[in-house]
Length: 130
Image 1 (cartoon, helix red, strand yellow):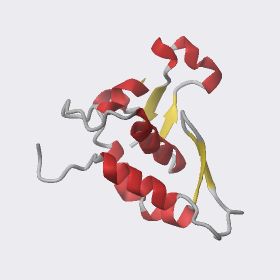
Image 2: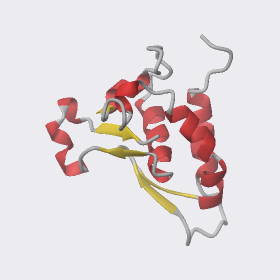
Image 3: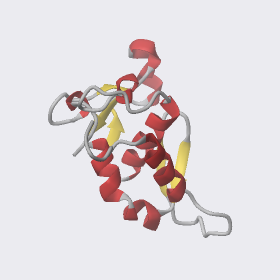
Image 4: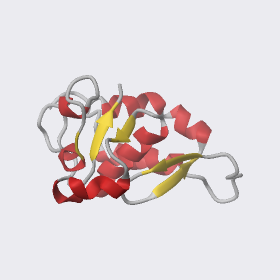
């Protein structure tokens, strides 16, 4: 493996949690992102402060996920990085990464939720726009 793991499950969770609102903060302005497991309202300024790192983590996914290379891939394949290494075993962590990506408009689902049952295992295909 390389010097630094860009796609680190602990870092994904840290960024996800940092982008959530803290108790007492004004939630009237938020960035909504609908993931697989939850719809989240992120704090706009903190989300923006992590934009580059979120993009860098998404860039570590396999080529098949990219709009310009593979056109999208099953959510279930997001546990591997572009080198074929498993970076997480938790679907929750993969969902957090994609929810962050959706919030910064760098990821999306290929079909609406009501059509996910057309995919193998009922899992959506995700496309990364970087």
